[in-house]
Length: 548
Image (cartoon, rainbow, N blue to C red):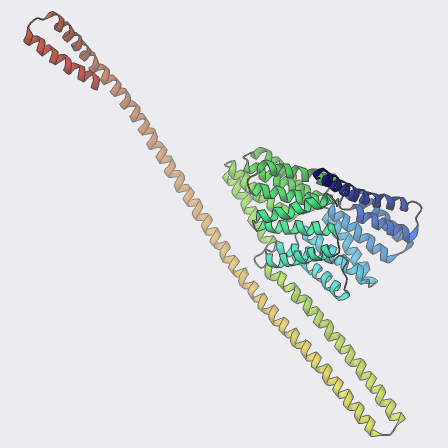
């Protein structure tokens, strides 16, 4: 029975992979002989099918689609091709290039006022900014994408946007908000049976639990992701899940198991050419080697990681390199170099993650709300002008058509009522605007106060550094004095040992001779009294010999 179940499971697994492969093959077959818009659409479908597992192939398809779209002058497909090209570069870890293409895609989408293209471009730009460590810009673009999706009632891409918003809040250590968005993204992905995003959401939940040191729960999410990728091939998210399992095992002290997962993740990332992922694995493997006291090997991996991080401008990776380097040189006993990297870590962390980051992020929804209210106010003013114009037309017509003033009075009252209603709406919007401005001023005041507190802490830190240096000098002086005292004590102890040895030898010689004389006397002397004295003398000499 068990063999039968295993056989069925194997067939299902192979079938799902074959279906995925057959879909890609059928698209490639359809590409031959296709022309114009049909060819562009097939190329776009091939990009979606390959960019997570074979980004180099996806890049070629995207370049072909962009070239063909420009050739036929299809503005909509030009924007879409640029966005997909940017997405492919993002999965390859080339974030600056990705941002450039996505911004071009957004510009064209805005020119043709295509809401669908706009909200997808906004989401992609926000996702790239996360990779670049610019979390405030990331959240602003992602919230704009989310708001537009909500207004249009769009489901496509919603789960990805929700997860990306969660990533920003996770970086700001706002874990409750992050969990809220990750769970919503997971629910939408499950409802739509989008298993790629289900795996993505589960990996995000696992990484968030890792940050909270809830390793057992994190492992459950990563194992669930690895189980899904057996049926739904997704090399990118599989490598992330393997990395997560390695981090869980490393935190629990299972170093051999952690290295096994890291090596599997690194192999996949090298296959798909995902630069940031490769650098992350080098960093984690270096951290593992530091824990195992293999500092020389760790130093080589950190050098490779730093080279990639500088190339792709991943400041969050550079920050972690400084942290691990400080631990490495501390293990090697190189305190000055360890302190140097620790200072670099603190300085970069201050520039990337200011104490006010959480408050800055909270200002973005307020800013979006303010923009929305401003738009409502403009719409109300336009509506007011339109109504006023309509009423004037009606009055003119009534004056021309009928002399009856009764109708004019009715129209006037109607106009007055409409104006009153619109005025109330305008007042309400203005009141909301003033409230938002007040909240902004309050938050800005708090930010200034936090900045002052940061300066005080920095000053106290400098004072502590001076005290630490003074204390280190005092400790070194005391250690030197103690070393000199220990040397004198060692010399004195050696002299005492020599004295005792010589003294015992000088005393023991006469005692032995006395014992020999007593033994001869006891054999030769016959006088009883003398024998008694010699016996007593022999016993006393024997006790003295034992004591010596």
